[in-house]
Image 1 (cartoon, rainbow over the protein chains, first blue to last red):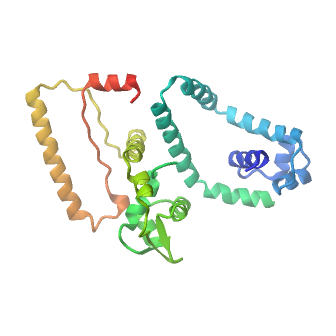
Image 2: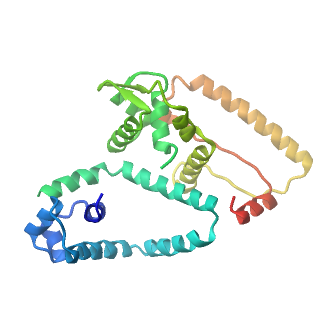
Image 3: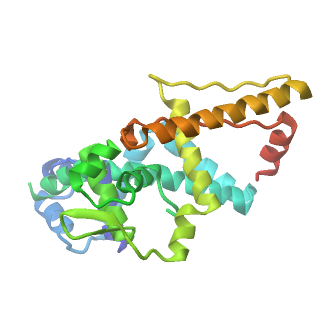
Length: 115
Length: 159
């Protein structure tokens, strides 16, 4: 997956039902351009930054997200390999369970993508 | 993710040794439609479930490496943790009790005998009802005991 694909995938995970019109308004990218980007056109750096900014803003709406990021940085330095393995496994299971429940969002995402 | 999630395990247990249709497995597992669909697809992709398009069964030839990955010690521990955590955070219908108990050696022996009786009772209960009770209706029961000092040491050492 390219950086652009990863960014758009993350964006859609966070905003599964957001219509192109609203994506355009929140990123400042023209609606026809947004449509093209979601259909594989190569992004410019500024466009990538606009999506990343929207993603980061959304993530930071949750106060725990920043704590988690900080703690993971600290944990990766001071915890043993076994402890990190357990935490990784724990987080992976949480993510996996959430992904199993995601179909509805993905279906909406596809609809929104077409709209 | 290595191992199996509890959701995947429930679907595999619902299937058991039978060859079942989509709705039959879902009825056993009791998962929401979209969750069940995704879990089933994931298990097919992982090669743990085989299908002819309408019926499903557990794949016959699962490599020992995969079996170790899904049934190995660390995978099981992570799965137990997932279930126990779910019980701890569950609000309605929950029974959960944990306490630090002062116990002399005589009472510890009595407790061990009571646990032994409990295990026998649960084994009998399971045997009696296993055919008439779907997987989703089964109860998750766990118990354990250790002493405070060794647990604290383990927490500090990070094992």
